[in-house]
Picture 1 (cartoon, rainbow, N blue to C red):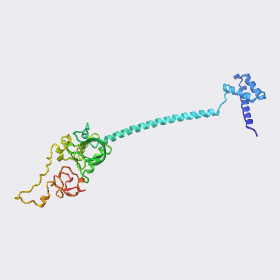
Picture 2: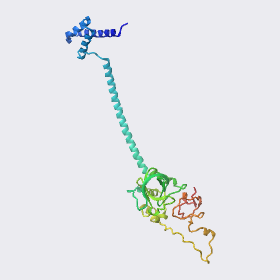
Picture 3: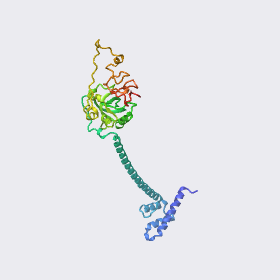
Picture 4: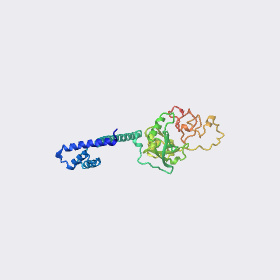
Length: 334
């Protein structure tokens, strides 16, 4: 069996002999005599393998002999492939950047279109140049937590009722449209400015009465502009906002009810007068005659169907609480 050293020696001898023969065949290259002598002496065994390899190494190092390397070729090929891949990735990256820019542009246009359509339901006249409170009552800015209906929202879980505005109650025609309208232009999470009515700081059944500004709009005016609500003219003279343009435009300028006068203390009638019938006695001054089935006091405060326990009762005009939204003579039908 041949050892590793023997195999290596055979390979080196073969390579060297081939190289020497190649050099001798090219006399025009002017091969130095000492090179020829080294090859001859090594072939004759006059010099050691180590001396001959040192001489060959010197020739290769000085590039007097060019020895092709398979590893160098492979490395060069790999480098070319890598460079080609880098160029391909750069092109791909450029395409991705371009696609990303187009997507950003489309998204921006989409947001812009959505933003414009967001305000479409509200007339431009509902927008205000400045949002500020008047008077001395409460004035604060916070977030909407719920849209209850067309004239009531919750701000930080506190109920705020729109001053002077009445919209349909649950079950009445137009209730859903009014609520959805407010929900669209001022959805939960929106920041609002609340300006409490200085003349109605007592509120209404735990609800603050105010003008509310949201997304650059006066919501009280917006609901009236859209026709989803009406001015409750009974309260015109009882509201700080009586002379605001929107209140004047939608009823306070042409129809103002008189201040509510509390009933006088009951006194005994003169003996000459006949006693009133039982039905007339039951209709005491504290009960509004528009609601003969039950004793419901007249405004203020303004009551909604959710504020009273009675349902489906007789309603006569003028119906100051607007319990009979469809005017069929029955109040709070649902």
